[in-house]
Length: 109
Image 1 (cartoon, helix red, strand yellow):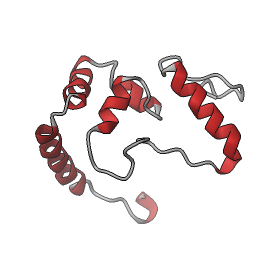
Image 2: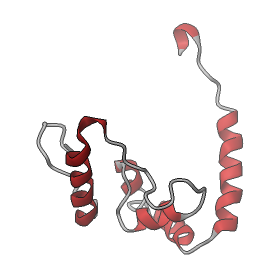
Image 3: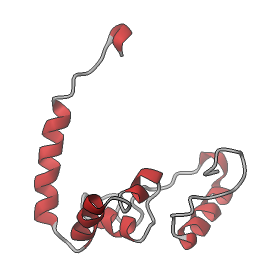
Image 4: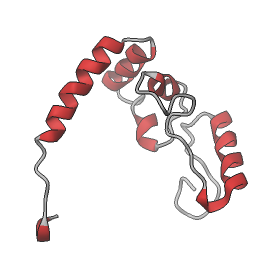
């Protein structure tokens, strides 16, 4: 339901074979299905996600959008090829930045 019209269309940027696999999983398990965001590696903290995104097999539209921008495209390709040292350094930096985000509470939240 990519268009939001209630039909069965899919994201045209997504790998069509992955779309078929997702549809089978959804039909098989009904409305209570669970789909891993990183199939094949969802129990590990590794670079497998970037391999999937590079093949246009990201579960979310935001995953596929990473390939649309030259900077993030290059980042995905670099990490797809096993640049784990850079990834873990970047992850630390991003977690520190996220830790500084002010949490809105009460009527502001």
